Image 1 (tube, helix red, strand yellow):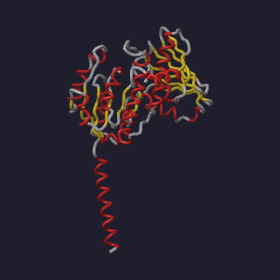
Image 2 (cartoon, one colour):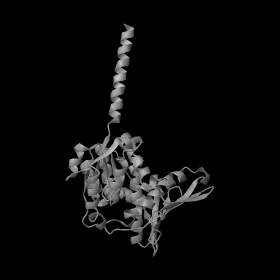
Image 3 (cartoon, one colour):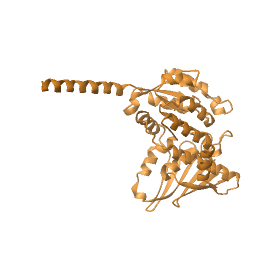
Image 4 (cartoon, helix red, strand yellow):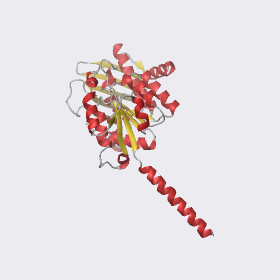
Length: 333
């Protein structure tokens, strides 16, 4: 009798494990919001690659909403071409963002225009994981609202530049020979667009790198705009300084991306970055774990750093309080 009971229990466990295995094998269906950036195509190629391994092997981009902003040339003039590329890859193109919800288990909010992110996020924030491409929003106020909606709807989300997860950055962060980090300088190309605060458009890559190494805790920022560079210096609460250098006339390609770590034992600089795969791997893990690899509170401070830099520029290089900007944005929400 006991033997038969144990046999039944074992059979039940085997059935449950088999069912769980089958459920785990079910691919995560991903929807793209915004086809006006090359990221939409590049990420889809990585997710839908038949040779994809690890978590990416069980993720498929299945549908996309084109979007596009008429007053941004790089959006208006490219959305049709990128949308066609996605359609040619077998991705279903839908007319409305809401049409994605029944088709998808997770989302890539890719619109190149940060101004539309809040409204687009609102339409897909139903508890499914969302990656928000840079910039998280076109203003700190919008980003604060995104976090509030995410918290209210229990929608896990994160935003990041690919620079945060590059192999070069991971190597530098793991280099113990540098010793205690005393400060850092990050560089990136400095391209701007009149629809966004200056650093939001492309400088965010360098600021993201700075925060990846320094972490949160910046108190104030001063910023100066020269003929060849825009330079923003932040003072952290522990006395460290972090500097962003936006290069207006630097080399092309991936060479302008660099970061220097000033340590107690050594100084080390890394140059370049290795593309999107490390970021897409992080997104893939996030779609399954639902645990954001970047805390939204750090992202909010990162945006506050850039808004403080903008305010400092407008005030002729006067220091601007980062934490005060954060508190005001949260209070006004």
